[in-house]
Length: 262
Image (tube, rainbow, N blue to C red):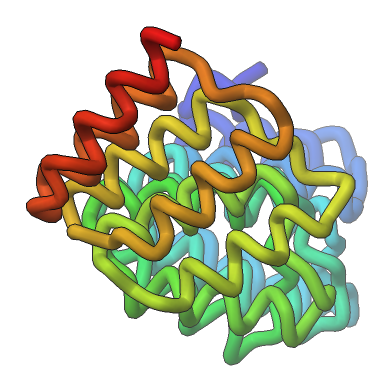
């Protein structure tokens, strides 16, 4: 209770009383509570002191202790301390839980340090959960950071061999709006992967971005797919007309209008 209420001084006093007054030895569970309490209070010096005490008595930090420290520091917005304990956890051979990696990336995005944290995770061999990859891709898309998105894609493919299905949406939209030809290969991959659901909304989104970047070839590939799947809706036609108009092909835009009327 004291730990969760972020009262580290009282927490130390309680542990000392249990140990000295009631002769209750300190166990790893007690140390876990201590570490959590001081991490949630962002008390780095005391956390380091407790870690040294644990090592001095011949004990080792548990996976739960690391997870609690990571959560505590990150909940206080201390990105560097959270990253340090994440790296320490991995160096000790523990698997870093998905919630910890996700929280690490969330705080990194808020601090505008996604690139630094991603590089540190790769260097420390920290696995990225599917939710984290998708979250990172969405942030890259919002900030139009193609370079980082491509680095994340390469790292994920090198590890698991494929992107999580939900990550394709923000990635292809980013590549298309940037006029990057890598979008064509990604679109082909999406069409051939039965695990990836291509909706009308996604097609419209890609077409709208193709108009902004004058990416005619991509737009025609998407419209071809829509015709093959018989999903040439009014929204798809409108987006494709916008592409032709933005690219200066006004006659082709007018032809689409005639096609709609028919």
